[in-house]
Length: 353
Image (cartoon, rainbow, N blue to C red; front, side):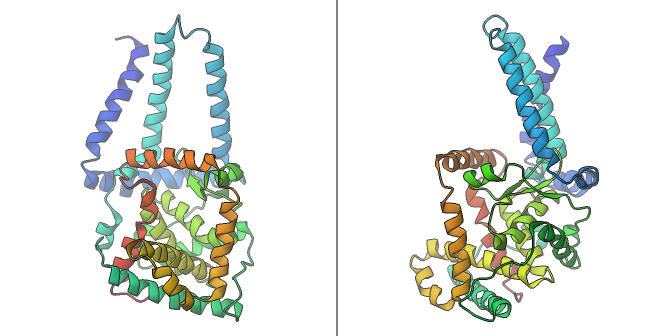
């Protein structure tokens, strides 16, 4: 076998091997997600976390330019040397595919978090309604404590950098009862692509190659803490968007800072309201009078912010990302973000908020 055929062949082998590995989440959990990955992730955060800008975004930009330059250079050879060019392309993809999975993507095949926390996934509409009422009471109390006026929206007094720093405290508090959420050596940064992310309708992402938590620094501040903590959950190896939402909520609400607590409870309340509305149309209109006007003003600000950036770009990218998630063990695609409500309801069946 010629050397030029080895990497393309390995790509095919990798694809089949990973599909098989997906049937053994216990092995992935034990040896990768709770083993090797934790060392890889921490090492990347130590090596790159100190850099004051998004190193991963710079790498992406350079990589895109290199790929474009290569294709332009080879544009006149695809008819005469298409086999050679195809082999080189597959070799590059093979290396990238291997690196992607080694540094991060095996986490897509780990055990669901409800197994580790010993909670179910099924719930009734009545249980969701009960939790929603409890969240309304809790969020109202915190909003009133911050503003001293139920009609005033909560305005965050912190800079984005301060929120990055304070987010670690929530994980420290959460790790007291759940050691698997221990987080050290922060690597959290505003994305250099924040404006494109906004047009795509996304609030952040994890760079799988550098281990950096990338946050859209254009978004409203009151949403910022949970988003930061969501991306930190990805850094800990929780690939599922519903699980990252759940852990992001838990760490934010565990924070000693009241503004983080408000961000967490208002976030969870919004998801529960929307999920309840789908199950029982008209529920939101009945519950809105129970919610402090200031909370609804925060929700309004958020809707107006994202609405001004809506475009075909967001629609197209979300279709692509939905397909990407489904290809990586998240069968619900983008709907998976909302499924964290299942975890929320079951986790709090016998617990106080």
